[in-house]
Length: 255
Image (cartoon, rainbow, N blue to C red):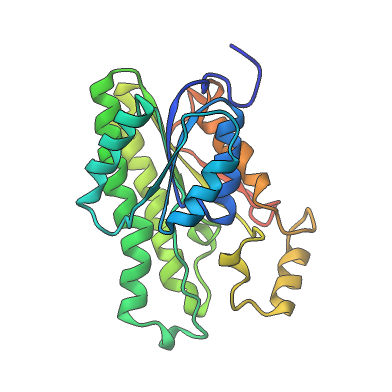
């Protein structure tokens, strides 16, 4: 085993959703640096093309998909099989947050939008990728994204978002049990505060300062600090880790 964080990922095919987000782009660069071939999936063709053009190595693919369209999931996996040669990793980072000022401001559309993307699409895309991994018979890695909100619960207008992330954490455990006999690991990354547009949109400056004070390490993470944990979970080093929720919160939560 090569002692690099991405050991075993050289030449491997990776589907990465939410690829042009703050964390997604950092994770894409991490996988590419480890020698993997990345299918970067997001909603805006120009942004995905720009991202892929900056990645180390070759064989990367830019794809536009709305993951709410469940019928597109099998086609997405089939495209990855054609263009990458395999699907060894699914890193599902696609997620949305609609922050409202109070509980009473949360609409049914807010609820459905967040749960459809954060949980529903995660299940069906994981199933499609997992089935492809089973058919290939070479094992695989599925990495989902939760949030510290799965543990703390949401506050006011973010209750719907936090509940969706609680669903992702439970989903991870169920998929890990189902896919484990096929040597497919399923794990979940749970970030604390990360300096991304999702966090910063509509966030009052005083709340941002409070977050830093409540984090023992004393600062809000940059997206690059999430890339290493994701690449590690996809690597050979993590082959005996499954059903885990990796807490990456700077100590804001401790478990």
